[in-house]
Image (tube, rainbow, N blue to C red; front, side, top):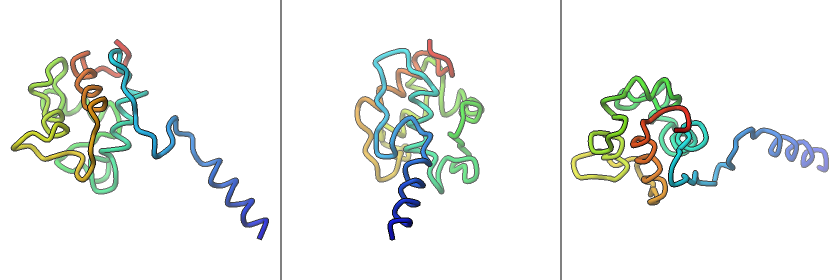
Length: 128
């Protein structure tokens, strides 16, 4: 019994190379949003789950698993420096007429403002 517990403990505690624990939410700074440190982690936690906006499923023909995939939908889903035309904002703000994303989840104001700030800063993959 001790050996099973030991093996499970090693497996559980050694498998994560993530910056955040699975239950921690991304906290966005007020400016200089990093795609790799905040935006991609946010997408991973909220958008790229099975059946959604991942490389395999591409719901609504949208893959949010990498910056390159997001970039393919520039001027459609993400319009750099323009949150009013960026359809991703319409969805995360759950505006009338837009599909509410992510379904069944509540995003806090920091997360919504973080994505908006990233877009206003140019939606780059580097820190502005």
